[in-house]
Image 1 (cartoon, helix red, strand yellow):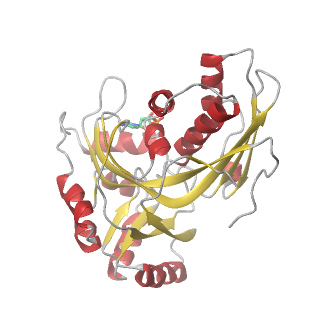
Image 2 (cartoon, rainbow, N blue to C red):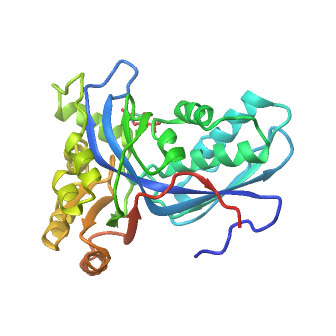
Length: 310
Ligand code: C5P
């Protein structure tokens, strides 16, 4: 376990998780620039930490530490800062300020909604710090104003997402799944992947079916059944921008993964393993192949944004 970021009593700390999409069906782009989605999210045990404490009203300094910290902006474009400002503007622009510290392990621009997770963490942490009277549903509404994945990053677990991916219902999921993540050396821009999706899919549908196969597999708790039905409509777009992903996915399948998918808009690849031993074996083989920046073993589902109380 990492040393706590901010052990002092005046810090409020929140743990947030990364996500993968077990199904990601994408429709035709809307005038808003967003695409309708029908997706099944699962939170996995790759955690960032967001800590906040009082500073004078109107100030929101942020420090980012940990993996790829240098890639995260520390100006007003930081999504966690925008989250804190959004709450402050709504509840007391002249009363609230916050210093933020973010510890990263979720890959930056990796298709695991790390930025959205940090925004979710900032929303929850600031609502506690400032003692705001705000319900989980209201927090999710603020989240949706910041980004399509933020509501799920507040909620966590396993959920069906429709609309932009921000209209959520929990999905029944039995058991725990073992994943191996292949982290890429380079980031991938989500809007660029959606843009390539539009080029590759001029006839994308307006209406999307529910990803029933994935939901049925989750109810059964059968990892083999789940591995066989993982689906991501953004994969061809991500692979056309990053052709090396094809080889990474193939390698994982040949090395015994039950299923292999690009996570969200990529470039992180997720491999479903039969059990912990198989995940260890797969992660060793992926690491020794040297095809990716790093390999992580995770499990899911795990909770979304949660206060750290110790
Ligand atoms: O909502 P968020 O800012 O995280 O989305 C980042 C980008 O991903 C959007 O600007 C858009 O290009 C794309 N996107 C999309 N349709 C969605 C979600 C995201 O086109 N449902």
